[in-house]
Every structure is written in structure tokens, then in C-alpha cells.
Image 1 (tube, rainbow, N blue to C red):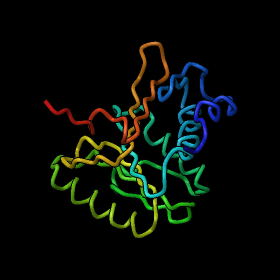
Image 2: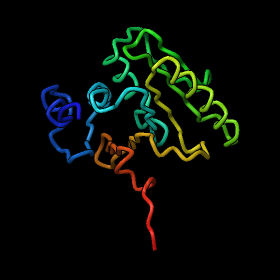
Image 3: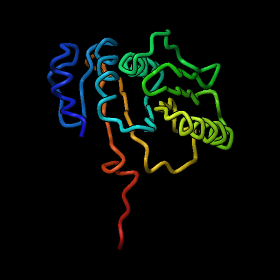
Length: 172
């Protein structure tokens, strides 16, 4: 599609060589940012990237890497209190949502749909932290799950819409 992400990661020197097709062991936050920069090559225009993982897993650090790859120079911070941050100077623009504080799915859904409409109008990439707050079915979304590892660092698992088991159906 847009090149081999493993090759991009290896040439950066920041990601560990321990990876499979779409899973990586990230030793530190620099490696997490590096993965964000590399993922931009995999995401088609107007993509929605759902970022899953516990507090402190590196979701915002990953978005910082994405922003760098998009040419955004302003500091990227978690939009936990603002809920949404817009970065129109990116190529493409970036909309970063953090749904952590939204306990009601209807509220999270409303914000997501408003921001998705704006992302479509701007031709923006959307990165959404805490997508578990949504009650929407998002079959076209990409997913990145970050988990802390007992041995240190993080495990990152990237899923495309076509391979996401949440988007598959079985006929009996």
C-alpha cells in the first residue's frame, strides 16, 4: 500500500526489531512517536484511527509522532479537557479527540459525529483516544491498541478495517 512499515521502523533506529506484521514492542516513548510517524504512511486520506489502551499507554505520544509526520509544528497535548484539538496546518490536517471524560455514549457519539463531519470537510485525519466511550459501529476505522508490558515498554497492535475481527461477520 504505502510501503513496508517494518522497513520504515527499522531504518528509524527507534523501534525494536521485535515485530510481526502489525505488532511492535516499543521500548520507550520515542519509539511510540516513531511508530506514529511511520503509521502515517499506512493510513489512507480521511482515515479515522482509534487509539485504545489504558492511561499512560502512550496514545498522545503516538499522536505526537503522527503530527510530526504531517508537518505540524505546534505542541501536541492531550485534549482530555478540551475534548478536541484541531491542527489545520498539517498535510493533511489532523483532528485529535479524547473521549476519556465522556461517560455517556450519546455524548461521545455526538462529539465524534460532529468532528468526523468536520474532518471530512477538511480532508483531515482523525485520531480518537478512548473510543470505547462510543456506542457507534465504525467498520472503516483503523485501530491501534497500546498495552503496557510487564517487562517494560509497550506492545502496539495495529489493525486495518479489513482485518479487524470486530468488523467480520460469520454466516451460520
